Length: 499
Picture 1: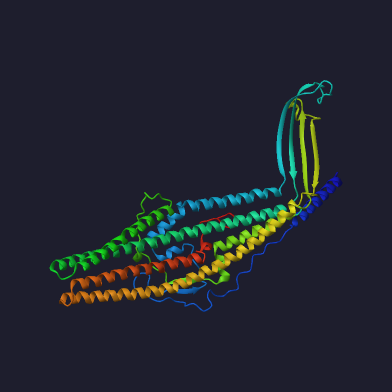
Picture 2: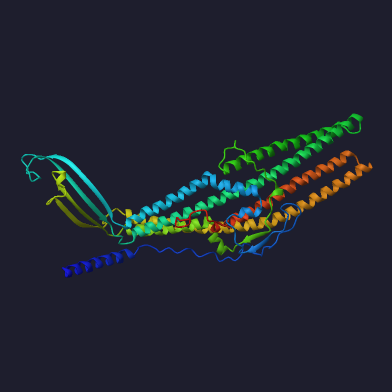
């Protein structure tokens, strides 16, 4: 008896080892991530490491810090409590973010479902029937009755050894797709947070522009009243009054579009935070409440491909396409299906567990495609073409990512210079207005001249506000272009579906 047990043990061990050996191989290419770009800079010539300084909000010098890490909540660097609260609210309630989270969960459930094919499939069934056999035929039951009940209960086991690794490649492909969805979620988070911060910046800019435009309208209204008095006295012609009236109406015409943009911007911020437009956001933003970060991160292109969600997503899509090539190759090779059944059948359900009612069978099926009119061959070629397509798309994504960072770095420098110029123009206009006010007090100039100087200053203020907003927007764009620090986040699922 002991010898029989040892033989059975050796036989089972051999079968298990053979099964592991057979499932160890997987046809198709083994995926290797593309090498990072060799570029060491974002421009042919070295970019300045610091920006020009200007006075007022958004005018501080910014310095580019090589390999500076980006915090997961990068928007907190603007030091605005209302902005932080609005971003957190958007992350919790935005429908697009919730949809991306659900898509990620679905992707990992598909992975787990496919992993089930590694194991045997076991099912149980009970089949009660009432049957009648023709009198010219022999009965199937011991009672020889032609009309009888038959109850069959059985357990079925089915197993398909993964001889060529086709299932492993399918799981590999699904895991890569789930990882791609993970980075799609990160891209959704990054886009959402950038849209919220940019929305706050645009709102702050519009509020300042509206205030300056109203001041211009007030100035031009006073100029208009002065000209009308002078016309009454015969000091100015009617043409001057008409020209001022036209200028006043033109200024008034610029106000409604700005007010419309402000209202629409508030609607956008409400929608981004999961609210209806009727639910007001009690968080008015001004440029003075937003602090421009002094230090800006700068990652080399080789590190950029690790940080950008779109590049990582393209890499995982390339991985999935590579694994699918192996799946199509495995489908062209012979496969084995092992089945086994054990059960009991009786004409009386109470006798199912009795003697002489049991049955069992075990078998294997070896199937190999012989002729399919080229279907499987062309599917393999299609998978290989898809892999080449994904490789080209990955290269394009990398180039676009590097270009994006380069464009933003140029904008950071250029818009800082533009702000410095706008700041000097604003201070010059303000100084001109101060001189005009003193001259008016001494009676050296007319009130009309002083009001024109004030209007020039207000117009310079609008240009300055727009230049300040551009600097804030450039900072947001750089954080976005460099990946937004998602690798420092801890409130989303990781690559294997865990927190």
